[in-house]
Length: 380
Image (cartoon, rainbow, N blue to C red; front, side, top):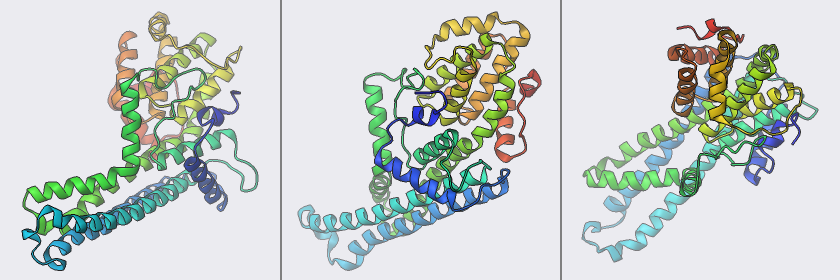
């Protein structure tokens, strides 16, 4: 795939749901003129209201489902406690059929709510686009990314410029990961309802189900919506920061940029996911190399040794570049934290983790717009 089409590298064959989500987001974007600069306050407001609507949907559906069970057992059917399981089965079948309908309506609303939320965030991020012409490849990549986030899709697993994001997932782990994502997408709300109903039943709180189930579902929906919107926020804010970062990276030597490519590839594999921001950054880095390679081989142990051999100034620039890559690809925890700790430790350089967290927060809040590769940007 050509380096100037990172969107096709990221999503070479999107499924039907992703294509429809992509078209819907693109349609909503073109209905409004692009902004000349990000509007962080409006983004904060959109995130808040999208989460509120997700919570309201949970309250309504939880109350209907919990209240429906209470109504069935206490009012609609006489002598419920004296009925055998065989006598109760027809009523349970009817009850769960209604639960399925309510859950399907709720899930549909949540997807619509998420898609509109990520679209607003993308527009309010100040990305340039035309209301009449096709989007640029970098914007297409971002739209694919936020669409997958809204649909709660996992990594597709296709190679990105020769890098396999699932390189560290083998056999049963890869199968389990795919299964868990499918369950989360299609059955998470339904499973939560069944499990919580049983838990509350065992705790002898049946009479409180209508009051408890609504808030529980609201918290569940709000948490999922927050995760989706945070991912979209990172993706939408990524391209301008990558442009600023590339302005700095183009001043580095070829050897330094090659080592940064190695780090980005390793970070993708550690994350088990080719974050759209990393795909865009990698494509631009590869295009900046004299040979413009279409794919790369990641030799992490060799790269770690090469990092340590750099002189102090070169090493500082490479370390800060990899820090920026981690900031661009998600919250500073888990695989990203372990990745930076390993790199800094191998280079015998202190990692000021609170500074990394604060830098990402300033960036997402709109307080920080410039990118520097000087050591001061990671000072504690």
